[in-house]
Image (cartoon, rainbow, N blue to C red; front, side):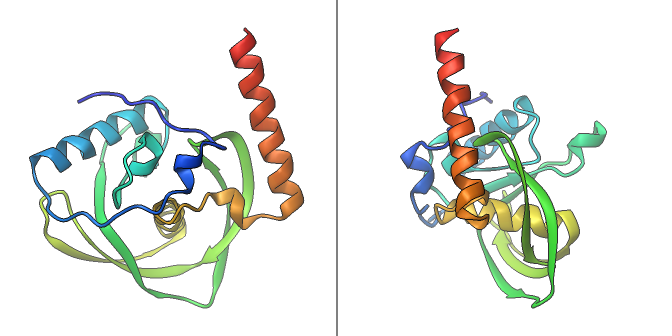
Length: 172
C-alpha cells in the first residue's frame, strides 16, 4: 500500500469523466488499498480514484474513521438507481478543494448499486451522511466537484482562495 498525492483544483484531470472498471482483480484491489491509505493520510472520509489521477469508476469511503475506527468500503462502478425528491443540505468539504466548506443540497435518500472489492454486486439504500458522501464521490466520477453545486460567486471566491493558498505554499 502506498499513499498517493491527491490532486487539487483547478487541476484539469479532476474534470475527466472516469471509465468503467472491466474486471475486479488484484491490481484493482491494490488501487483500492492505495486509495484508502491516501484518504486516511489526508484525514478524509471519501476518495474517488480520479483524485489520485486514476480515471476509473472506483470510490473508497470510511465514515467510521473520524471516530478512530477503520471500516473502509469500496464502491466499483457505482450508480444511483433511485433518488428521493426530498433534499438534505450538508456542509461539504473535499480533499481536492482543501479548506473550503460550503452547504450543498442533494437528494436525502438514494438507492445505489455497485461492485464491492471482491467484484460482488451489491445494493445499498442510504440517507444522511452516507447518501451525501456517496453522491459527492460519485460526482467526481463525472468530473464534478462539490463547488460546482454552489453559486458562481461562491465558487469563484473558493477557487481564488485555493489559488492564493497554493501560491503561498509554493513561495514558502
